[in-house]
Image 1: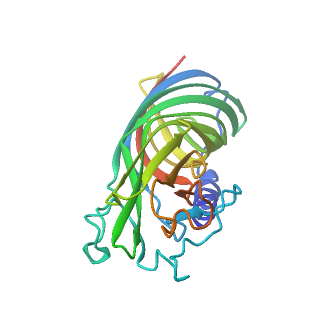
Image 2: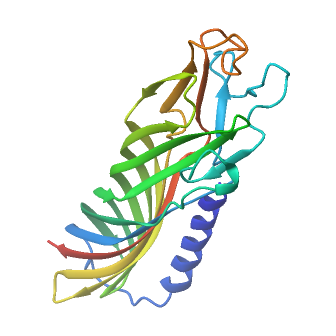
Length: 275
């Protein structure tokens, strides 16, 4: 929630600080529009970027995978990114910023300075996001998700002057994801269960300028959060010896998944046409 609170505070300060500077206007922003955007998006990392386990297969990912001696089998810990190799000291690759491009269509209603509207959007975001766990074997376990597309339906509200529009926006988001798993563990077999669609929400704000009558240009920041943490699981199972850590809690194996939502923020340049 830290990133969400930051977005809300930043947007509120921007809107109220600049609203008084906008001159009053007629219904100049009322009507439909289409626009496209291009920018870059960065994945938000946090303390919940870890792998969690369901050792007894009760559906709760709150267990510790232990060895036959009772020790935590994952004491080497976790890292953000894809593991370089099975040694924790080698670290993980860095999840880079990605391209964010797409289009939208919407409609606004202006009443004096106040503006209210709705907008629908489809974007293509180049994001590959990984998290890795290391066991004492040693071995690595890397869970990767790739965002293939991102849709959104949002409300927006703001203040419109003769040529300037300042707004905040928020609403529903959903995305198509492709998951994958890799490990250096050759003893167990691993079975993946995937749901490709994830749902969440978006919040942000922006500034638009009108020129040439019906054309607009501006900038926008948009924070997206998709509830993807339970959309993909991997079961570690046999055939292995009865002392294998993954089957000590349940002979059918243990499940593992990510603990974090898919959070990312995007800075965009927007170009549009109003009807």
